[in-house]
Figure 1 (cartoon, one colour):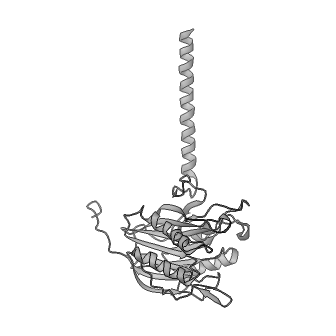
Figure 2: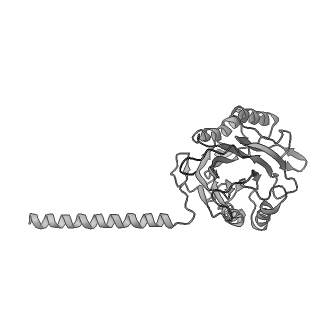
Figure 3: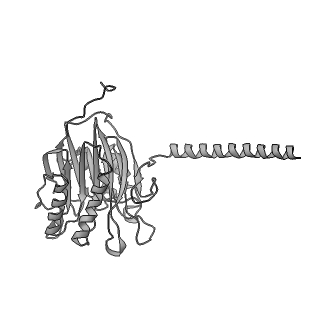
Length: 318
């Protein structure tokens, strides 16, 4: 009886092991085949595959090692455009004399699952229209209405890795949170770290500075990059906010060619400097604010920049 029991136990163990292996194989296959699956991490304690962090897109017409003579960068708070306006935006990002043909695009107020924009995945739609990769992130929902908060996105034709959802420090009104999305772009042999930021509006200045500093803290986790771009809507409503943003990023070695007095947002007769485009390790060559683009209450910013010196090729690449 003990022999028959031992045989039965061994047989059951073999069947259990086979079942476990089959289950793991099916799970791995499902994850591997899932389209646009994000393997990026969230830095707010959430699991690596955060539902509020998405990476995807398929580039067109750009080889992995190809690089431009100068890098064109655009930042734009699109104020959740959708439908025909989103198609118009895609056309402008392709062909507009000022913001068209950018290699790095940072967007804010980018919806993914909102009734107001038809529950479309805005970042994915734009990436498909432009033939680019993208990373998108959003803050947690605070009103529990089943809809996501508006997010930020980075689009580029270059290889994109190590995407991060940066939950900005401190809450805004009614417990509202804001985020930035970060990603590393491989431009030839150069690695550029890029952040698109959507900061809080109603917050004391000292908290705003800590709010923005969250992006710089995430940047410290990526020391082996050749250049950095931080752009987006910082909501620097007051003059003291503008001065504080200038001081914080200047002390961290960043520069911007766009003067502090240039307005980037308007409503009726009020115009404010809310949006920024910071560079470190890249040299700005030209810049502008495209005030002919009127799809949002913000205007898009653009900069062309000289890339940092190319790293030496190693022996295997020569």
